[in-house]
Amino acid sequence: MEFTVNEVIKLVLKRIVWIIVSLFIGLSASFIYSKYIINPSYTASVQLYVLPDASETSAGLNELNYAQKVVTTYINFLNTNVFFERIQDNTELNYSISQLKNMTSVKTVNNTEIFKISVTSHSAQDSYTLAESMQRIAPELITSIKPSAKISVVDPVTFPAGPSGPNIIKNSMVGGMLGFVISVIIIFLIEILDVNIKDKEDLTATYPFPVLGEIPNLSMSKENKYKKIQFILKKRKPLNEKNYMDDNSKFIFSEAFKSLRTNLRFVLIKDGCKKIIVSSPLPGDGKSTISINLGIAISQTDSRVLIIDCDLRKGRIHSFFNIKYRPGLTDALSGMADIKDVIRKTPYEKLDIIPLGSISPNPSELLSNNQMEKLLAIFEKEYNYIIFDTPPVNVMSDSLSLIKYSDGLLIVAREGITSHPNLKNALDKYKLSHGNILGFVLNNVSINRGRKLNYYYAHYGVSHD
Image (cartoon, rainbow, N blue to C red; front, side):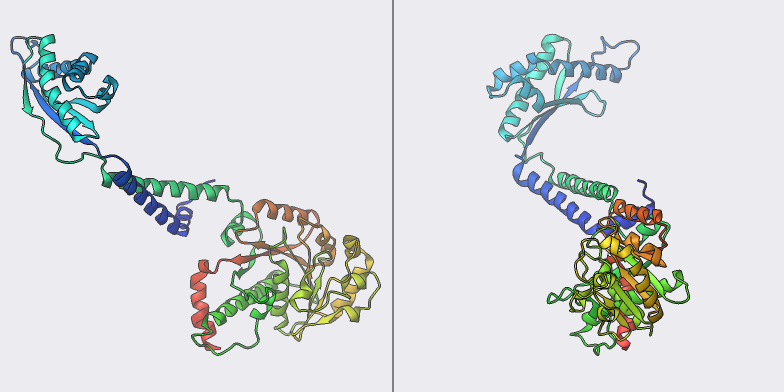
């Protein structure tokens, strides 16, 4: 998966809070670890000078180059076990030769004839004792190996004035950068591995169908989870500080369905009754809520609308309007009830519904029999729009039986929940059945992502009602 610069910027800004938190956690963790957990270390050092012997200087080398070569040789003398055994005997400290080698650093100073011996330990006294011993023993050892060697002390060892490590500021910065880098890597991994639909752009970039509506995710009343239909109101309360957010949310929700209604007219141009299937890949995508609110929005344009609950196993349309589910569609299809008995009025003048009816053992067969075609022929004369609320196509294939009666399909997808594999599977089923896919309705859209739209509605629409 490749990311453009704009996509990277959008992704980083989308997760900027997590990145900042990770950066802060990295900084804090490194600071605490360096300040309170790591034992402080102390370094004592001595600098020695190698005086070149003019009588031994090679003809091809000047004094400085010769001295530098000699310094390298002397450093190798000091990295031997013999040197550290003498240090052990002299100091009588409880360090092994391996430990002493790890604690000691012998390096040249800026490519000069000066070399520096540094000892680092968790004890200031031990570091000083060891460095002071090396200051005395190093020249003696080198002279014993090479009698002509001339070494003098340039900068004698001193007792450490304070800890040499850890470098709290440096470690904290490194920790912060690690937190930042790790958080960014994790964010991109999640983005790559996340197969759920992220937003409208994700849909339009992946599929050749338009997004006809974006339904925002709003906080609903806890008293009745089915009161979403009340967001489309004929009258609104006067605006005041107490009801500002409620009215603003209602307005945004209402406008979302009005926009869906308008877009639907552009993609479904037909004389007479328009029959629309509303379906989704899986349960929980919100197709029933979409069906009802779309029906309400269309009915407010003086068009007669009939919503038929074709989810004959788990239909919920009746629950939204607090009516009984039978008699309903299954009773009419099986000849157990008259048409006039299954059509129910709603609080909306131009909107009627047909609930699912008595639970049937063979819903697919009922939807595909000739009686369904006869009922629709009657309904077409009375209504401008017929909306079929169907079961999820990836769970039940009932909606495929209705394709031959419909003029188009609306596919409901839930932002952050519906996955691309499930949506592709649903689309493939409808394509094989030669369904006319009108477009998508993206449900549960994060309202925070549309703050500009929210601001526009709040200051342009609601305040003047």
